[in-house]
Amino acid sequence: MSARGIVNWFVDRLALKPILDYMHKKEVPQHHHTIWYYTGSSILLFLFIQIITGILLALYYQPTLEGANASVGRIMTELPLGWLVRSIHSWSATFMIATAVIHMLAIWFTKSYRKPREVTWMTGFVLLVVSMMFGFTGYLLPWDDLSLAATKVGTNIPKAIPVVGTWVTQLLRGGDDVTGDTLTRFFIFHVCVLPLLVFAVMIVHILLVQKEGMSIPLKDEVEKKKLPWLPFWPNFILRETMIWLVLLGILLTISVLFAPSLDLSADLMAPAPEGVKPEWYFLFLFQTLKIFPANMGPVTGEFVAVALILVVVVAIFFMPFLEGNPRGKRSKLVTYGGILGVIYAIVMSIWSLL
Amino acid sequence: MKLKHSLITRRNFLNGLFGGWAAAFAATFISPIVKFAWPPYKEPDEVKLLWSDYKDLKPGEVKGFPWGAKPGILKRSADGSFIAFVGVCTHLDCNVVWRPEQNKFFCACHDGWYDEEGKNIQGPPPKPLRRLDTAVEGEDFFVRKPEAKA
Image (cartoon, rainbow over all chains, first blue to last red):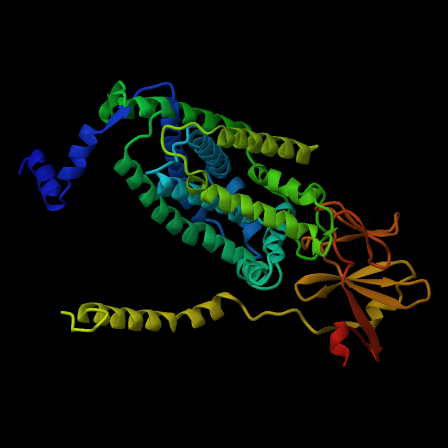
């Protein structure tokens, strides 16, 4: 059988014809917001890098109280390019969250979450939250004083929620306190539970994007204009590849120049170190918790802060229904709300670093 | 098929019956899974220390001890009695440190301060540090939860 014959055999047996036809016919509209389309595939690039470097790190990492810190040290000092693998994993996480936030903001400001893309928005927001959970669980794994203190604070936050909060904290910690069990469990969340979750939600997210097609600017939507377009294959893919190569170059450069450090193994009984900071994408939440006073009337300030954060998170998740405008209508309130949110996050993040 | 006067078809009834049975069957697995995932480890009711390790502590000095997985802090008062604290900030669970030069406990995570009695005096902590009871019995030095005394 010829090579073509073998390919055709697979196409036939796996019923791939409709998918291939779809890929050949897929068009990408060209307009002044097309650039945002590339943010989606950039997230995928960083996710792919996370999977590869993550598997490499897991070959040597030991998720135990005694072994964790030392095994990260071994990866960084003994294994060929180990320091770089860890550095890329750490930086690619940052890049992935950053591109995901840009991706989300682009959709927020172009109002692309509206009917019929409500579920695409909601799955996308879940993916961002899961990505942040990846960051939170991964931060503990090197097991130094800073990561331990950050985890204590982070896992204590659910306690402010009445009834179920303590339960959530116990599930996260594997007990009332952060111990070696917490480390093992964070590792399993990081390399097993969260990846399964990400893949399940991501498949729905990407299939929905294919089902509804690319969202186009509000104005063109109203005028029902047929926009100029590029074939997805190979023209658009070629452009995406170019962007991937540039991003890869930036990622590698930064990873080589600014490799993360590793402190001494954490001591569960030691006082919290000064200058405890979470990852940059949690800084605005960290600062929000900090500015609330100890008690506000009958409840703690922490409860008020956590309740407010939860309300905002739920509101963002249900955004397409809360706004409820038809496609094509502008909504200044949402735009200003988005700008205000971005300014708040930036100001609070900078404040937390002062 | 739907009988006269019946609200649902036989198919719907059987679907519900089978679906309900399958759901109930699956639910029986939830309890053991939940019990396994939420561990049974609890804070100790008391810990036993050696009196000889602590009897030479000078008034105003502090010394740590393990209170389960948390750090405990023993502080000797001016009158020679001991005060035991759970050395964990009441705000978000970070370990606190005794600052002898200021006569205060300090939590570095969010700038929380407690006075020498463990009372929250500055920053976000909503409550004083948790106090524990102490008792010397022969060679042993016990630190206990206040409610465990009875």
